[in-house]
Image 1 (tube, rainbow, N blue to C red):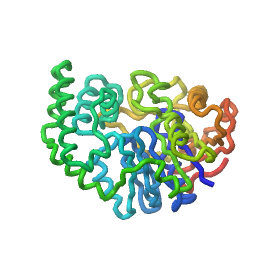
Image 2: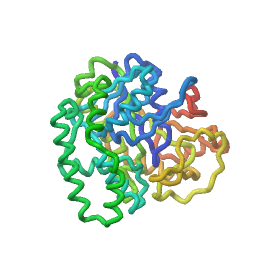
Image 3: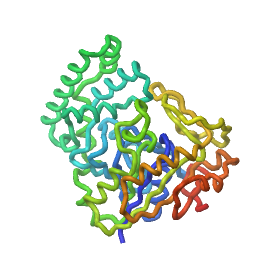
Image 4: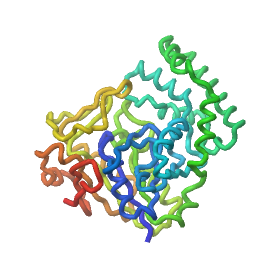
Amino acid sequence: MAKCSLVIDLGFGDAGKGLTTDFLASQDPKNSLVVRFSGGHQVGHTVSTKELTHTFSNFGSGTLLAVPSYYSEHTTLFPPAIENEGTFLKAYQPKLYFHPLAMITTMYDIAFNRALEKQQNHGSCGLGFGTTIARNKEEVYVYASDMQFEWVLKQRLTSIKKYYETKLKSQPATVQEYYKEELKEYDDHDFIESCLQIRPLYSITSLSNLTSSFSHFIFEGSQGILLDTQHGFHPHTTWSNTTSKNAIDLIKAHLNDSIAIEIYYITRCYQTRHGNGPMSNTAKITLQNNEEEANVTNEFQGVFRTQALDPELINYALSYDAIHHQNLEINKHLLISCLDQLPSFDYQNFIRKIDFKFEKTYGSYGPKRDCIKEL
């Protein structure tokens, strides 16, 4: 029987979605498909094996197991980054499927995002995800299917260039100058060339057309519920539904009604936040064994912060996610990651404070899939 496994981060992101997706994909790699249903090229999901540690941004986190990835219409794609990462992963024969209406990010989106972020300091990744979504909401489009038509692609890029030239007129001089500086060495020809170069890596299709080819659909979430466009805390939110909403909608639209659904909710054993947004006022913590932390201070997101875990925020996230799958029979699991970094964490005491019951609770004591154990 086919099944769906949803990987949902309960916090502000960075809880271990790559690790969990890789763990689930390893159970039946030949029959699995990773489905990206939110976010896009701005994610950083780290997977570690004996041979390699890699942070995925443009491919699903099952790729090291030769599990293909599907990007839905709710996601963004950045062709130059797909080309670079695809070249790096060539030995693993990466395979992508794109919904025809998956949204393409351009250098114009990235430049405008970075120029605004320098002024606003909201904690953006600086990779144009939010500006891509905002542009699409204003009906200025470029889609995955456009990459197959070079003339169409050129016209789309011209439209987007003019769109941002108009938007810049109402911005301060500093934003206008930063935007121009970001594009100083950019040429549409190079972007179009990247679109052409990645053609062997992907196919354009809908999820419905893939249902007969796979029996395990792993829905790899992005960021975390506390950054959700509806349930996060403005203005430090993402332009995306990071709950299970999009995944449930895709399952209802494209998969069999009787398909088994599981949700793997993930949290680190401590609270994290990358960027300038608020964190609840919990105790300071001292971590160990975290020398390989993939999240570091960067120019646009700012400092990576850690504090003690807050059960109230976990209950908040779980309560809002439950709204999106009422009346559905779903097995819910909890995975607590990074337990090796905080030996003082009492997971049993923590679970007693959670208002929701789980079928199974897992713990991760390291960065690799074989470090995950049922508690």
